[in-house]
Amino acid sequence: MSTIFSKIIAGEIPAYKVAESIDYLAFLDISPLAEGHVLVIPKKEVDYLFDIDDETYVGLQLFAKIVATGIKAAIPCKKVGVAVIGLEVPHAHIHLIPMNRVDDLNFARPKLSFTPEQLEATAEKIRIALREHE
Image 1 (tube, rainbow, N blue to C red):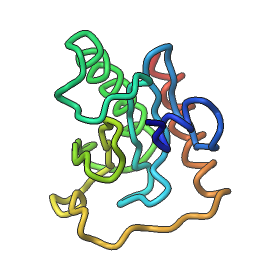
Image 2 (image 1 turned 30 degrees about the vertical axis):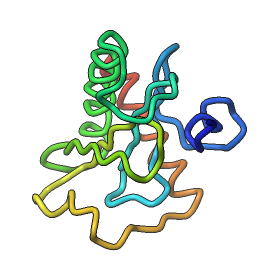
Image 3 (image 1 turned 180 degrees about the vertical axis):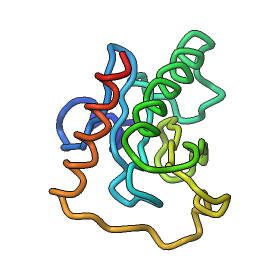
Image 4 (image 1 turned 135 degrees about the vertical axis):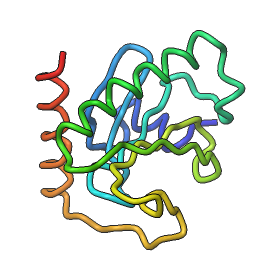
């Protein structure tokens, strides 16, 4: 079954990518809770995070840690929060969300809306921060 994330990986659907490796991809959430809200996914399509094989799971967590350093450097925030919900898209993914308060991770809150230009500018800030922290 091809998910929207698999279509992003294949280049069939555009995304505001911030980091990519052979096995993982990180891109902006287009319905974010905060500026810089990033989704980190394995390129291997698996629905449930805890069904991922151990090597891919550990790699995904390490990749998310690297991406979080770029988010923290690019977006003013106290910390980068981590959430795994897994109900929206049947493809394992980790939410990385810049946060200043606990309720910044409240998925019941209304989502923000940014223009394509704003999303691209945010993605570029994170990409630059990641290059500077290599």
